[in-house]
Image (tube, rainbow, N blue to C red; front, side, top):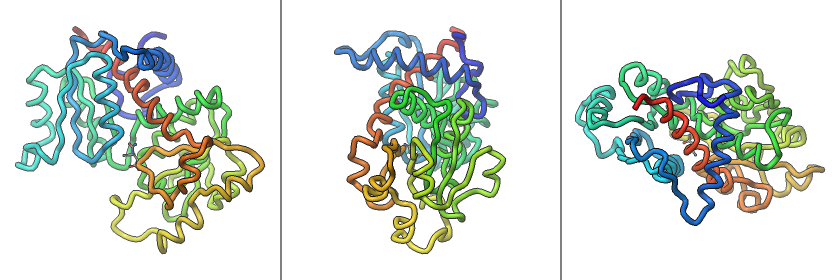
Length: 309
Ligand code: NCD
């Protein structure tokens, strides 16, 4: 297969197994490109991409911008804080105004779940979801699986536990879809209040004891507590959360195997992960960031090749 089955990347939910395989094989090629002295290819010289960020971002935004520039696309950036959204313009109007400047692709982060799907139905550009509220964050899940594949040789058959605030995490949902599609076994672990009631329907197991979850898994993906999405308290205190669900060197050393530790960032050192773990060889956190550029180059390149030019 040499083409994606989709024209937009709105969520992992819309992809099939072959799409993921194609994205990874394409990313392998781009990973080699970005390790050359000249880290650039001319592939998308005729494409203009708008990065629309209606919500905070550091890694994802820089990673997309770098991926676009390394493909030689023209790039424009927009952030909601400095835009006319504050003056009452609708999302469709904002985006259509940008598109009238002949933009081919939109990478969008938005606080509302489904914002990307909505936009894809109303505007004529290829849409990439860079995180829509607590819903999906497809490129994060792709780079996470790509990093597991790199460290462990594959994803199928591996045991992955996702630890923390599953309820408010778009990273968790996209990871669950991506890992299941590739044949991994998935469990979630966290306070019961932060595990959604529909979790069984996603075909994943639940483990509320962190030590047991770590004993079971090959990989633990540690998530940040999404305080910005909480209006009430979901656990008694941060200290208590860390005692029960934070990963530290002592608990890792008590396991009779080496597991891989992942984190999408931003890390809250001393809350969900201690510094000695985050900075250890078991952690692949910075590999994830590095792979993010190659994976996003692959996604953008493959979507751009479906745009009629
Ligand atoms: C995540 C996000 O924004 O969804 N970060 C990221 O994109 N690397 C996770 C988080 O904010 O905790």
